[in-house]
Length: 418
Image (cartoon, rainbow, N blue to C red; front, side, top):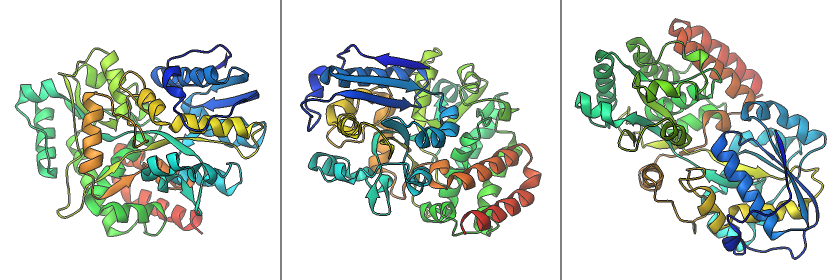
């Protein structure tokens, strides 16, 4: 879907003048491609772009919104032929194919500016490949276990902080006639979240990243232990039936209706749960519990990003837009609970007074000593991520196929990382 934004909308206009260096006159066309196709992110991005337009009335901004799954398949084509000036994407290894193909602009110059260098320092590593920065982050968010607090109270359960307590809660939920977890693996990446947590809790962050980087065999006994822990849940019947037929959104009603009690998901799930009628008295959140003693807790906190295509036509305006996006006031606004409902990346921004944002901020800032991962399909190369997530989904449906799945993934590792 396409919309041309020409008239100023001023949701951020009062604060936008604080966004950092502002070009006196930006003219011409600025084409922006977004993958924020869900209603709340789309509205937030379009309002932010309109505010940038308000600052630069002589600039003609054209915004194209593409369904997120379609965007993933189209990005290489549109970066190669007739690219926009700005495009959304993801941090870490998900950038690498387009960096290696010289399709993303080196924006290291922006990271030399004090306001960006100082206030975005925590995310610089995620934006760096070969010693250069290739975009800017605009949001990140915690993952964790969202659950029906009212059902916990009904069953007399407490938030678990050990693997045994986690499984005991799950069994009590199953005994009550409900499923422990909802999940939709139709688009595979949700199973990647489960693998991230089970592997980081079983073997630790460093091992997890070694596996993502192709340095460990998929037939390693430590990997097999991760799947053994996962199989405990599968064998219990912890997950909803036929999850491979549902998208993540289509799996939400199981939790809304109380047919399943938990969802291991990113914080973006909160808005649709609220929209479906659940109150904050009914929903709560906890950190995925420890599995192996002595393994420091690490978290998934994916970082979403803006980039300038290497062949963009209006790089001056594109750089100004990136400065605007990462400014403290804009970061505060777009990430608040009424908009993206996520966490700002600018250290000078404020975290909105939202229950789940506060819990996530506290977890990421004080209780994730093991490290912060981007997410499996961002930390692993795209081809390996796709092959492995297909294997994760197959394992959840047919765990008896594990040996064949791991052998297949090991062959893929040897080919992909040559």
